[in-house]
Image 1: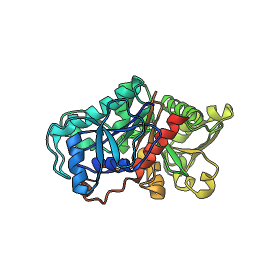
Image 2 (image 1 turned 120 degrees about the vertical axis):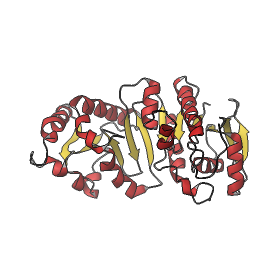
Image 3 (image 1 turned 45 degrees about the vertical axis):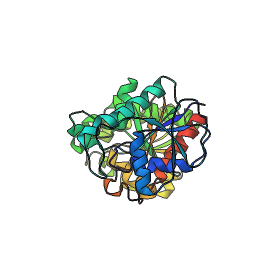
Image 4 (image 1 turned 30 degrees about the horizontal axis):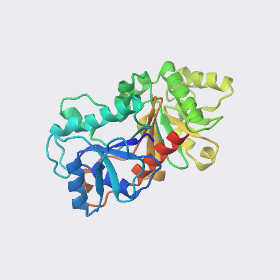
Length: 322
């Protein structure tokens, strides 16, 4: 029974806290935390949690409540709660490297990730845009798609971590075709939706208002969408984002395609923050993640909510089962 690996993320944040909460579960396959073993022991003591940490040897199957499998990844420097340290940037990336290597080599079913702090990794002199881009490069994939989902809404993104001024130039016909192909493929294969229904946001206010507020919809976006509609795909033309996210519209959609990060994700997170999960589509393995950041001020306080990580693990296990 292949394991699912969980990266514990930024050690000064809530990643270790929420990973420890996974000890409450009993799952069909091993859930293995990539973390410094001593860090988890210290954090469990700080939180008053009685958790048996078991070094993972690759032979265990399921755990009982109160146990947690751990693969030790050594810290470079001791951790102070809530205080970022450039010295531990490589520790965070080593978690990602191992999780990707195990998934690519068939030693796991995939990975669920706790949050990292991109700024401190970059301050350490390591170019890093995020989990999504890291796994894409590791897998040697030309394009992946970030999608966040709650129980009632899925939002995929054409662009991800770009400055807003760079977004229009990044939305090309080629990129749209790549993103939509991946979205349709994974909705069919991973989520078992045989005929996906997709709503598409325009880039500009009022979807350009017939060119008066921008021509990207006329010149780039709608011509691409028309090619899929001609194939019988149930897909809208570009719609104004401010009216697309109504209950009536969403009731007839399996996914929404947003043009940029802060166009679709604020709506999704307002509906289900802490219950949403981030999925990277297009990878040759399963990758899910929490929908929140490192919450440095909550580390070790016992106030961090672990619900998003549990949802991410649940979805990863469900996708592995399918």
